[in-house]
Length: 296
Image (cartoon, rainbow, N blue to C red; front, side, top):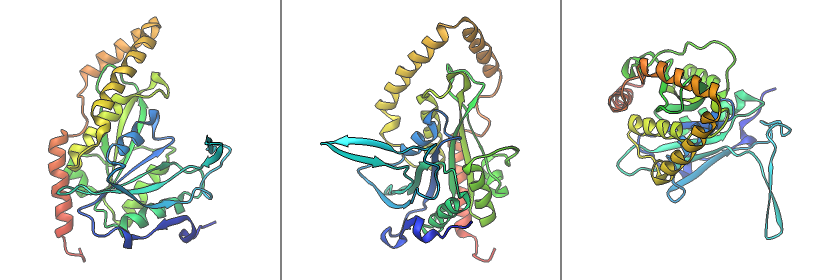
């Protein structure tokens, strides 16, 4: 059953005005957000004092509320129900690239309509590219800076950034379907993801959030917010103590981490070019797209 976007997508480009070389960042809670690293990294590029909510997706048709349960809060004896939110936020960066961020929750139902909402907003705001941001459990040690890897199905963008074409086969999340839809729609799209030590289960890993946000900041040429400053540093130190204690209390786990460290050190730490080189190549690619005749 198809869904009419009219009732579920609340958005008007008329209220936004012209944006400066915007790029959309998409971070969704759920299967591709282990430890919350992806959504927290996207949040680092929006400042509540300067950002503007320009649209939202109605949660009602997209969620099984027995799985994604709403939250209840009480303030001054007034009970409030909070439903899953999917908001499009514009962050203007004077003199630099503007950001359109979607921070939301991966839907359970009607994925095509949800994805059409994203594509509709990206086109209406003139986004030059869409970057899906994710975090996934991997066999890496928590004592090393997590690697950030990327892929794109756009051959020109792959050559410009030294990325690989998607090669994963198997079950996927909304981000995977979104990437395929963007490719079919002719919108340049990149998937960036950071690894989370799988033995930490779903514990937070601020070091991964910081690595992902720093990479995005360099690549896109846009500033990350305060989350990468003192607050993130404090979180990294605090969680590192927790992770070290968990590993230190388990002899087998401690030996396993040492093995991961040895393997990690033997590999190249990055599977894509340095962030600075990538930033130059990304800007060159987007500039070429802007200069390309419309009928190409």
